[in-house]
Image (cartoon, rainbow, N blue to C red; front, side, top):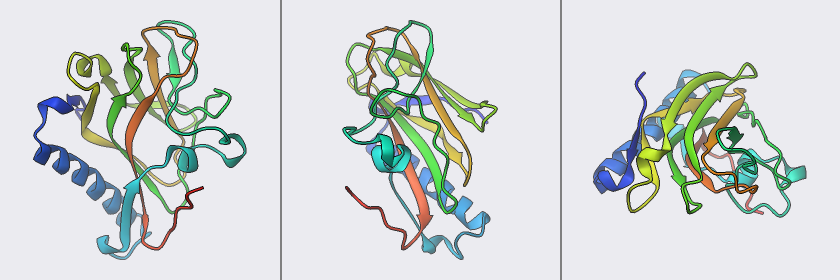
Length: 190
């Protein structure tokens, strides 16, 4: 599967809608294939809530949104999932969910990161690699993936960025992520 990032400024709004809808379709179809729903209409796909969906309750106090592990050394890979003390996390997809990643945005100024890598499982099998520098010479430092990255129930999800700078703090790398699940599941906003 060829995967690459398409800078958002280079996409018409209709194409952005098509790419997100394609990500939703992939998530719902996987739920159907896994027999977690009876029809595509039995599923919803919602935007992921970084704090409530990816960070364990015991370590989310004081955390408001996407933040990587602190970048300490140039050229080193750091997790995009960190708790409130900057410790790397490897979330596991819950039994009745599918996670779909379709977009990436670097919200910290100064182009602090380069490569974005997706891995699966405890063996950290690489499944996709995106060059974020392709998005950084435009009005906005974000882009859509040519093919969404999908994780099934019980998959371990490891996602990293490579540091181009070493500010010693976490940077904001927000992933366009959908949580697809059977209709009726609820998300508690706390």
